[in-house]
Image 1: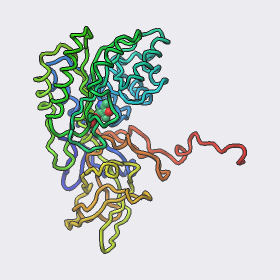
Image 2: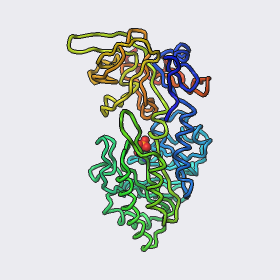
Image 3: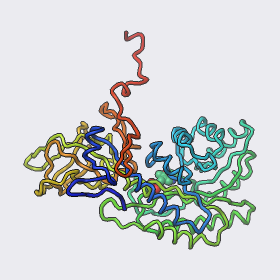
Image 4: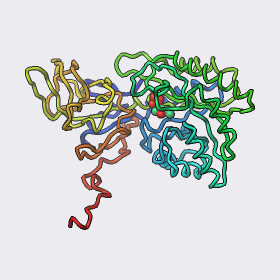
Length: 418
Ligand SMILES: *Cc1c(COP(=O)(O)O)cnc(C)c1O
C-alpha cells in the first residue's frame, strides 16, 4: 500500500503532481511519500503491540536524516552497521539506548564510538570480535552490552546475495558453536550478555524460514538459561519482503502473529530490524528519458538515471516497475531501460513491456525507497541525485543534488605533480 497514484493521467505522490516536483528540482531524483513511510512503520510496530518490543529501523535501507527522524518521532530505535550509520542515527535525534550495532566487521574506532555513545547493544558476530569488544570496553572502564548473532542455517529462499542465515554465509556464529561462544563471552570481564540475535536474509516472502529460525534460537535460549545465562533481548533481525512485481509477501500482522505465537512463552523484549518493508514501496526514482533507440534486435530507452543511482537491477537482477509520469501514448513496446553509464550491466529494466516513451518524458521507477539512494555511488563522476519528501500537496528537498565541486572534495594533487 502506497500513495503514488494517477489523477487524470498524471502521476502524483500523495497530493503533489510529480511533474511539478521534477520542474522544481530537476532529474533524476528520489521521491518519498511521508504518509506511506508513517503508515508502513505504524503497521509494523502496531502488529506487535501485544508484546514487549522495539522496532529498530535498519538504517542501511535508506539513511536520509529526514526519514530517520520520521521513524524516531514515531518511537523507533535504529539498527546501524557502521560508524557512519551510528553518526547519522545520533544526528537524527534517536535515543542511543535504542540503537543496536550489527555487522560482521566492526573496527576498533567504531566499537569505541558506540561504547562512548551508550548504545543498547552490539550484535557480535565472531569470537575475535567479542574479545575485541571486551578489550576496548575494559580500556574505557565500562561493560559492553552484547547479543551474539547466531547463524541458524536456515534457507530464507531469497536471492543468494541477500541470504545471510545459511552456514555458508559470512554472517553470525555457526549455530552449533554458539553455545561455546556464549560461554566464552560470559567469561569476559567487560562483556555483559543481554541478548541473542539472528537475521537470516532479506526480501523473504514466506513465513516458514522466520518461524524455523525462531524455533532454533529458542532452543539455544533454553540451554543458555540452564547454564545461568539470562537473556533480556531477542533480536530477530529484518528481512520481511515486499511486492516489487507479483510477489505476495506476508502482511506485517501475519508475520507478527506467527512470531508472537511462537514466542509467547518467552519473557524478554523482542527487537526487530525491518528496512525494506518500511521504505521500499514508499519511494521512487524519477528520471527523464534522454533518447530512444532501435537496433533491429531491441528497443532501448535511455534515461538520465543509471546503475550508480539505482544498482539493484544490475546487482540482483531485481524487478522495478516502470511507469510514465504523464500517461499519453497508448502504444506499447518491449524495451530495455538503460542509463548513461559505460557498462553493459547498466540497466533498470530488461525486455519490459511499457508505453512508448519519447525523449523528454518523465519515467517513474517504482519500489526504489530501499537500497536505492543508500547504495548509490559517484561512478562515472556522476553527482549523487537529490532526495525529496512529499507530504500532502507540499514537497521538501531533504538532500541537495551534489555539485561537480562535491565530486572532488578532499582530493589533492601532490606537490611533485605541480
Ligand atoms: C540488512 C539488514 C537488515 C534489514 O533487512 P531488510 O531486508 O531491509 O528488512 C536488518 N538487520 C541486519 C543485520 C541487516 O544486515
